[in-house]
Each structure stands twice: as C-alpha cells, then as structure tokens.
Amino acid sequence: MKELPLAFTTRMKRLLGEEEYRLYEDSFNENAVRAFRVNTQKISVDRFAAIAPFATERIPYTQTGFYLDFDKIGNHPFHHAGMIYVQDPGAMAPAECVEVQPDWCILDMCAAPGGKSSQLRNKLGENGVLISNEIIRSRCKILTGNMERLGFCNTATTCLDPARIAQLFPETFDMVMVDAPCSGEGMFRKDDIAITEWSEDNVRHCAERQQMILDNAVLALKPGGYIVYSTCTFSLEENEMMVDAFLQQYPHFELLPVRDVVRQHTADGIRFEGCRCKNISHARRFYPHRSRGEGQFMAVLHDTRESVSYAMQAKRPTAKPDRVVMDFLNETLAFFDPQQVSVYNGNPVYAAPVFVPEKAAFSCGVTIGEVRKNYIQPHHQFFMALGKQFKRQIDLAPDSEELEKYLHGEEIAVDCENGWAVVTTCGCTVGGAKVTNGRAKNHYPKGLRKLKI
Image (cartoon, rainbow, N blue to C red):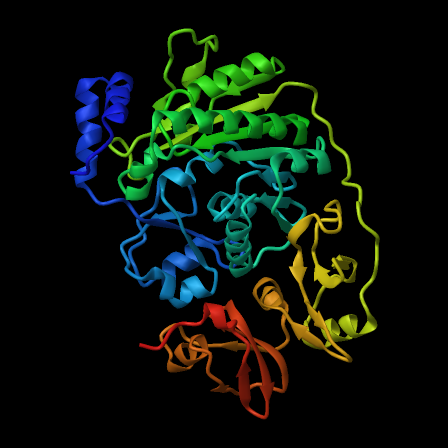
C-alpha cells in the first residue's frame, strides 16, 4: 500500500465518507488499468479488431477504446503505424461528454501529450479543424510527434500562453477542451511523483491557474459553443468549486448533463457548502474503485447565447508553393487537392488551417517537405498523413523480417518502381522510402527507430 499524505486522506474521507474511502484505498492494491484507442484516421475499429494480436475487450463509453493486456506496445508495428494511441481509460471519458459534430472547429487548450486531441480529431470529418495547444515547448514537441504519427490533416499544434491563444483566435471555436493542469490526485495509483509533489498549497495554486485558463477559453469560444472542463484530480477547489465560481462569473453559461454513456460509468458531482449551482450533480467524477481507470473530473459548460456560424477568415498571405512542389506531388501521389497546398512559415504544407497566422503554430497542417535546389526532401508528416494517396506502396506483414528491418532503419529489397514510396503494414503507413532499382532506402526518422537488442 502506498503511503498517501495525511492531509489528502483526510480530505478524501470527507468527500467519500469512511466506508467508500476504504473501497478507494483498496484500489491501490490493484494495478493501474491500461488501454488504447483505435485511430480511425488510419483504420476502422472493426478492421483493427479483426487483425489485433491482443485481446480487444471494449471500453463501454467510447466506440474506439479497448482495454490493453499487451506488454511493450510502443514497439509493436501497429503503434509505429499510428493505428493506436495508448491512453488511460478514465482519460477517454471527457472527450465523450459532448456529441461532437464533424464540421466543428475545436481547440484543445492544454493538449500534451495528445490523448484527448487525437480522440477529438477522430470525431471530426474532412471539414473539421483541430488546434492543439501546449505551453511547455518540450511537451509541445511530444504532442506534435504524436499527431504526426497518427497522420492527421487539418490540424495545428501551438506553443502559446492561453491569453495569446484568446488574442489570436477570438470567438473562433465551437468547442474548447480544457484538460487543466492540476494537483494530480487521480494519478496517485500509477504515479509516485504526483504523490510526493502534492500539497494543499499546490491545490490552491492549481485552482488559480485553472481559473485563468478558463477565462481565456471563454474568449476563444464562439457564442453557443461548449467548454469541456476536466482534471485528473479529486479536490473540490479544482473541480466543483471551480465550476460553481465559473457559472457565477459567466451567467450566460450553463452546466449541461454529459452524454448518457459517460454518466453511467461516473459518479455525480459533489455539492459542497455554499454551492450556488443547483445542478452541480451534472458534473462527473471517475473513480478508480468504481470504474476501470484512474481518477478524472469532467463538466460540460455551454454558452447559451445564440450560436453563430461563419467561414474562417485567412490570417496569412495566400502564397503558393514553387512549381517543384506541385511537380513532386503529381509525381508521388495518385490524387490530391491542389487547393489544399499552401505555404506556412516558408515551407510547403497540405491541409493547413487557413486561420492560423504565420509564426503562431509549432506545426500547421502536413509539412510536405524541404524545398532544395530542384527537388523536395519529403517530411515524415507527409508520408504518415497522405500515405493512402501514394502511387507507390510497399505493404509488409506486421510479423515480417522486412518490416522489422525497416523499423530498425535498414534498407530493404522491394518489388516496386523507382521513386518515393510509403511502407505500410495492413494498409497503414509506417513511414517512407526512396526506391531505386529494387532497393528501398530507409527514410524512417532515426529518433523513432527500434533499437536492436
């Protein structure tokens, strides 16, 4: 049994009561639950379930989620191919609270490492747009890498202060996900560092920061839009008290019930002394002793003002790429939309949100590659996002020696015409290669390659 801070256990007993607290405490004797989601940008859920080499017991409140019983999943070819995203099952619940429409424009305000962002992007259609923000640069790099592996178009990652986000994108988003930095009480079973860093002072500090983030989320939200507020903590100050204070400050917002599939697997929000929100029970708590996963809190805040719908206005010059870029695309891809080709920060990109200003994004759209003297050096994003559109595709079985060699960074023999090609497994892109006379020169990034044992 882990040693929990006395002040924390006192607070939890007050929240849960002695009897239920014992059930919560008993959950620490169990292993943390592992899970993953299928990335439907790459493969359908049914197709994945048919080929999965591990058990596929479904998570009841998300159509794409499964519990995981497989070790070293990060080394599996399906992970390299972006077919799955490993995520705590409780952390999947907030993105399921609202019925996302496929043409929405969504902001994930605190997005790293990308679990909720990728879950939301899978709910959007070709015309939907996702902006994923992470203020810490090192974490933004991880976020961008995950979005790259999953092969998303019409997305951008930004590394901006919430106030800057609100300034750049006023009344822009149909939905803002605020998975706020918190005191991490819900992670105690799986994260010893969260235990050592916990204090009541930190709880108060987190609550102050969360209020600031929510204030800026309001400014970035369209009238009629939705804020989904979530944390991975149990404290009233960061959860129900935060929601109650928000509703007092912004009376044109209301607290809505979550979707029924989430409600069935979560507990009611807690009414506290002085609570002014009559329906605070609409907020939800995900407890590890009640459901399979770590702790979460979530609440749906709806702007009741009349909704607005308008086309996104371009905020950067409409520069067109060099002719060499278009020639490269025509030679490499079987089909593409020329209207989706543009320039961002001097680089040719595909399917980049037009309303993201120059220099604002860490990564915007799909980077096609680097323009050199008379040719294009393709970027890994290009292979991962547009692999299904390539003329040349080298499909390797997931258990094949050739795919293992490729993931180690080796050159492989192939039966493919000369030119740029994608290497795939079960039809999903793993990376790129340059084929010359029956040999595929490896272009899988060094930092992603499997280490030889």
